[in-house]
Length: 240
Length: 240
DNA sequence: GTCACCCTCTCTGTATACAGCTTGTGAATT
DNA sequence: AATTCACAAGCTGTATACAGAGAGGGTGAC
Image (cartoon, rainbow over all chains, first blue to last red; front, side, top):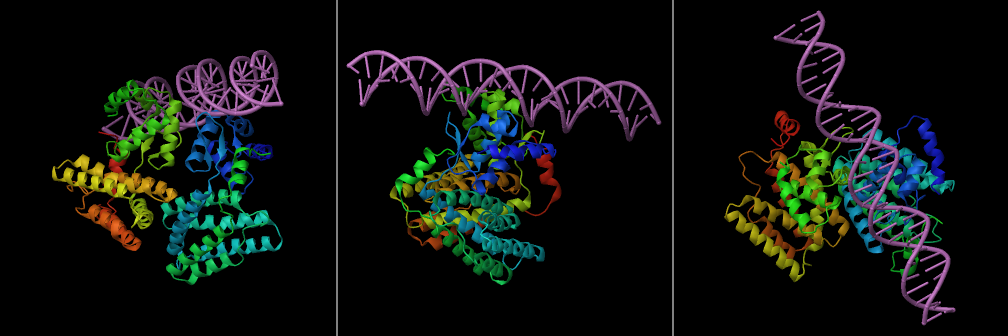
């Protein structure tokens, strides 16, 4: 599976890009966000080193940072793995995200610059388009882009950073707990609604709508305490 | 300055403790919390390695983690330093902390176990005692202990973790911006009040009181845009 | 057939070596 | 006296070597 990265990496090297720990962190983060790296995936240092063409020193630094971000878990003398939070932690992540992203929405409400409004509109339009065409991967990417943009544009950058972390962790738990058969987590007009309230609503309205949006998202997951399945996936997991 | 650590470290080694990156992270975190390491202090890898009796590999891992925690800042090819946030970031840290710790207080309100109540009471009593005796260092330690205990006991551990980070960052900015002449940041009955509301108040009341407490704390700082002083301290700084 | 043990292989933890960048110092020049 | 240039020292970035922990498989005894 990481073999598919090889080519990208080689391209980037030829493009003169610098391969360092930042690069590796970005690549892995992105792979987790787009659910190309499922929770529980093994991430041996030597393997990653070969893929990215660097020594273990660099890989280790990248992994340490990813552990701090809660994207990767590491136990002493064991292979690092993509995190796979349990159900309780999942609920806590959503609760935390409601709190933080609700506040970010409130801070942004009524204060969007024309450029910001336009950018959000563009992303949401593309998301809608992707959905129409059934291009699921692109739709997910756009959906994430909406929230990541809000995190980036948060007037309070500390909150913005915290939100960026929570978005990442949310992606992981969605990959873990999305209902089988449910092709996607798509709430049709939510993002457009949200944009309207950010543009012309009160902070309280924007906050409430955001919190509702996130609760709806959480409700699409299957968070009942069904023992077997998750642990199996996580522990036997690998990439197979 | 770090020489004072030497002895502690040697003791710990003889006590059979394992010196690893976790140990170093804890020591530095603690030194920052108790304001023994002022913002801007240089932290060269080799020096830390000698002090703790480990190689740079271990020190580098510890520093990477501290950077992720926003306790230390690192620029390429430059010595790591204790973070020294600017005034704007300081305000953002306080705003974020009001949001998070307010929520934690709300979650805890009316749900304190007898053991939790007792422990908080004990810490607050010791804080009061330390204040009476003019033992400033101990009072600060107790004051921090109150908030750290709340972070630890947060029913939502994700929020708890975020709060722990914010407490650390708050300590740093207090060290940076506390008013000269103002010996301490002590709000006499705030913690006792808070405990009362956590015990018998509504979530909303506890949240509001916590937010107020944090705003009062922020108000004790000197956050006017006075250029020179801070940058001087941070940049010329060192430990001198 | 099953269980226990041992061996091997893989992977991580740590130390160390070397290369390159950055900064400060001192001399030479204007 | 001020300025610039060059050299030297201090530190970081990266690679690599080696030791030790863990997991899995195979073999032997019961």
